[in-house]
Length: 275
Image 1 (cartoon, rainbow, N blue to C red):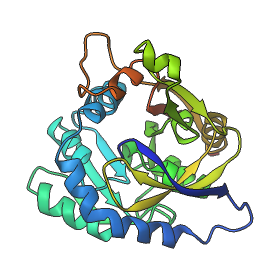
Image 2 (cartoon, rainbow, N blue to C red):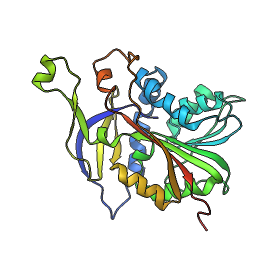
Image 3 (cartoon, one colour):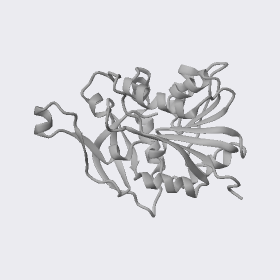
Image 4 (cartoon, rainbow, N blue to C red):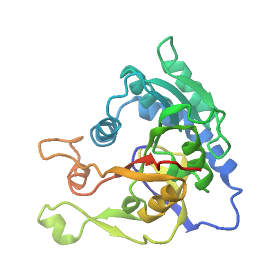
C-alpha cells in the first residue's frame, strides 16, 4: 500500500501500442522495496486515518471471508485483515516485499504470502474468493483490463472488488500557496497541470529516495474499465481529515481536510457476468 507521492522527473503519455514496460516497473519496486518496507513499518498518521480506516469501513465485516490481497506490498494491511478474522491470500510482484512480509507477519493465523505478477493470470480457481482487495496498486499497472478480468474471474458470484489508488487530482497536480494564502494563513489550493491525459509518470514516494512508476488516469477511466470487466460500482470513498482530527500536525494536514489524497472504489460483480 502506497502513501502519497510527489512529482519527480518527467512525465509522458502512455504508449497505447506498447505494454512492455511492466518488468521495468517491477524492477523499480525491487530497488525501492527495502526502503519502502522501513517507511511503511514506521507508521504514517495520515495513511492510517484517511486510507486504512475508510478502507476497513467499506470492506465491512470480513470475519470468515476469503480475501485475495492483490498487491500486498510488505504485508501490513494483509495482517490487519487477518487480525479482523479474514482468511487472507496475499500476493505481490516484488520478491523483496514478499520476503519482508514473510519476515514480519508470517505465522499460523497470518496471511499466506507469495510472489505473483498481477499482469499475469492468477493461479486460483474461478469463484475462489469472497473479496478481492487491491490497495494502492492498480495505478502502478498498465494495461489494466486483463488484471481486472482476472479479479472478476476469481471472485464468487456475490463477491466484490475493493481497491484504492492515489486520487487522480493528486497525481495530476500539487498543493500550491499564493502569496495571499500565505499572508492570510489559508490552506493551500490544488493546482492541476493536466488531468484528462493518461500519462506514465516517474514519481518518488514522499519520504523515500527511490523512484517508482505511476500511471495517471482520470476517474472515468477506472469507472469504464470496471464496467468493461463485469463490475458495477457500489460505493466510493474520497477520505478527508475530520474537523476534530489533528492529522499528523503538519501544515499539509490542513490541505487534507478539503482535498482527498486517495480514491477508494467498491465494485460488485454484475449478475450473470460473464456468460
